[in-house]
Length: 195
Image: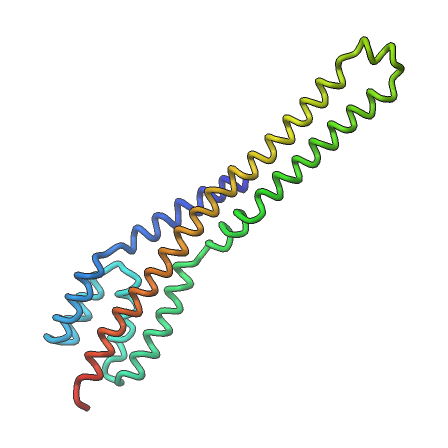
């Protein structure tokens, strides 16, 4: 059940990050040239981009007429909102990645307890009956096998969750760094204009 949810979160996050893709070098270049033309041209170019970076710059452009300080504050607020969108559901992947091996280990402990129980039951049978019965070693091996499967399943669930979480965290940090760079383009333009 946890692995199904994990796969669903991974697919949703992959779709989300893919939907934000844009050529950021071209976007920064277009923003600079659009700002030289007019604020309306910059708004038009930023609204055409699906990226989180453009959404943050749009917040600054909306408060452009109030000055660089107001634009910077608006962009910081928009950046915080974008950070929440970027990091949505990543805590689930991190928690699952950290705890799935422990759930598997719990299954391992239960399997080993079953193996020792089978050995204990064999030790209580008379020696003649024990010689005729080879059932306990089969139960022991079966319990140990189940224990190892539980461990393997826990690790198999954890590895993709941790890998995906790390990938999406890096993508989120990269997006926020690009956002910072793009907001600086707007702020530099605003501060260069004489009051």
